[in-house]
Image 1 (cartoon, rainbow, N blue to C red):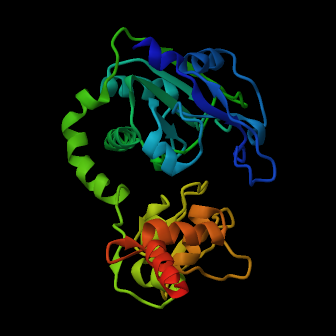
Image 2: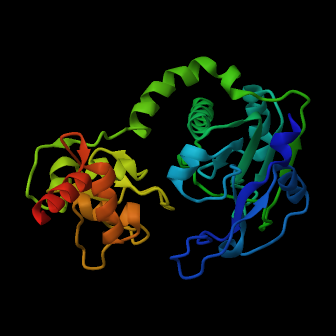
Amino acid sequence: MKTLTKTAKLCSGFGRYHTDNPDSPRPRPFTTISYQDITQMAKKPPSTPKPCAQWVIPSSLLSRSKVQQFKNGKFHFLYADLDNSPPCLSAVIPQLQLVVGGGILGYTSKSATENCQKSHILIPVSEPLTGLDWKLCQSTLNDKLAENGIEPDRKSEYCNQILYLPNRGIFYQSINIEHPLSFNPLVTWHDELSLKKQALLEKTTKSIKPPSLHPTNESIIHAFNENYSVEDILLQAGYDQKGTNFRHPNSNTGNYSASIKNQKVHTLSSSDPLFLDNGGAHSAYGAFVILFHNGNRRLATIDAGDNWLMINDLSWNTVKRRAYMEQRK
């Protein structure tokens, strides 16, 4: 294992609501922790109430944004989250070592008991992984666990999913296996990753080319809704799709709580930024304002006219400005 992956400073915080978003009630800067620090922590873990417990995202990018982590994150370990009828830690570690052939750190979770050893298992990699490669490798790791009769929590495949660090509960155990060889999943799992890559690229890197419209007097909001579907906006904002239902990037439950009806999106999740107390729904443009511009309609209108809508291959705003100047002559 290269020193880089052991000592890289990874995104960390305390409690599930920790955020640096300046628009939140209590924004706080993120802290950092390395894989090496986590191995030491596993030897003598704290005993902290879960709402205050420390977590990590295995990326050196200090962000909880799923989109930003996918695009710009550098990931330094894979991990398995086992909380549904898990095997005991001493049994699953040898199974995983046969799969990865490298170092492994495993520790039981805060809610583990001797009869239900919920656990987290970390697998450092030889080189930092991009968001796309990490997501593919996480999916492959979970597939291999499932093939061996171990049911992983698939939320571990989200680039912004937080992983709680060692935290002693009524039962605690940790196992750290050092190994002289570095695990390189891009080499070891090359064939499997190649099969996954194209399908994932088509889903997660969907690119919307700004439509070129004919000269029109319609409003920019009407034009936006005519040329973009709600589905387009949700996927661009990093939502996961399952049929006509969607799950927002920061979902803590894994539920697909947002649904589309009559070209509008409605969500039942109060943690989704699109949630409305009155049960209302958003058009494509309404969702765009909230998800891309935090509800600032002025900035959203400028962005839509500059980058999302075109008239005869010129931006909407350029054409409208020219028309305005012509009228003033």
